Image (tube, rainbow, N blue to C red; front, side):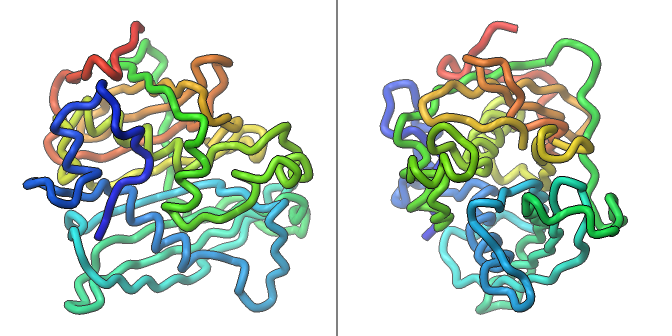
Length: 290
């Protein structure tokens, strides 16, 4: 059964239209499209791959692409198949691009394809290419004020909850000593959790809170990791996420910042929607001044 784990629930700010994403008995129960990341990450994990020496203190989630071929079922046995399509030399590290295809195991229907970019710090300068024809392209952020802005406060225990619900058990997100070993002052929020917040903002504002309109997503990492894209500086649980959005045809281009610092945490990202609204609808709980 598929539940959404990047929600702050229960909260008086949420409406009954949000209940469909967290309550399995809701009449219109529906998983958010980002749920597919969980089985995809398990398939794309480099920890058990032969020939790769992985150190959790040096591994970061660099990029994420999701394409759904149909809305996710609310209950199913999934089968995910992964293959490495390229390893890129980013100088300060290596970016391992893996494609993961997920099927409904009972029917063999193809449900989704993901491209996961795992960045291993300190493994660069091996003479490889910096770019790949397989890499899904990010978006340019429009040089105009955003069409809509959404804000939401994360909870102090957001990383702890997301860690257990998603299966991403990297101690970077819960262990203060491990976080310091990895170069952070304290445990940080998962980049994919921040992405989950941003995707909900876009679906709520540009798809009338209907996740079945989602088609595809590209989000990426940090300028301080590799300058060509796009999960930027870390988020500390309890900080406020501010998602700025621009309508570009059937795509919504977005970037997400930490309100308290102004730093970009997700940049050059986009979501393709079926039937995006011409103007956004912003719930009071997400309303922000531009």
